[in-house]
Each structure stands twice: as structure tokens, then as C-alpha cells.
Image 1: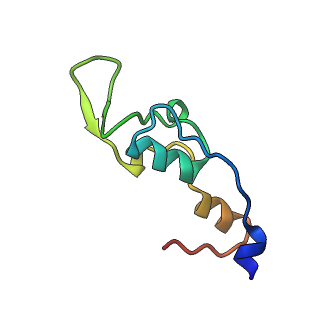
Image 2 (image 1 turned 30 degrees about the horizontal axis):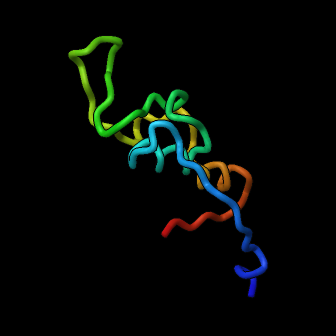
Amino acid sequence: PVLTSLRTRTRLQSCAPPITVPAWACMVTGVDPGMLGLYGFHDRSAWDYRSRRLASSHAFTEPPLWTLANRAGLRARIM
């Protein structure tokens, strides 16, 4: 009953680019790929075309939602 009361209908849009890695990262941090510096499975580690790094949550500059919840004194569970 509680989940039913929270239900709404709306059209969701993904981030740009709408691919897995940045989409999940944007969902859990609430910021766009440009702010995260995360655009795909491999990202540039410098401002050139030779150096690349594997995308990782260690590169996030913004905290995920569960960290913000913990800072606010709330308990967060991730499943």
C-alpha cells in the first residue's frame, strides 16, 4: 500500500550520452556526465587523445545519494 501511494506516472529521460556507465552514475549522484567527467566505459585521463582510464566510481567528484542520506542522519540500504 505504501508503494502504491507513492506511484506516479511520468516520462523519464536519460542523460546525454544515454549509455550505461554515465546513466547509472548520473542516477546515483544527481549530476550530469560533464560534472562527473564520466562519458563511457573508458574516459580520457588527461586532455589528449592517447591517455585513457577505465570508468570507476573512484573518479566521482560528487557523493552518491546514499552518502548524502547518511550525512543527513538517515540510514540507507542499497540492493
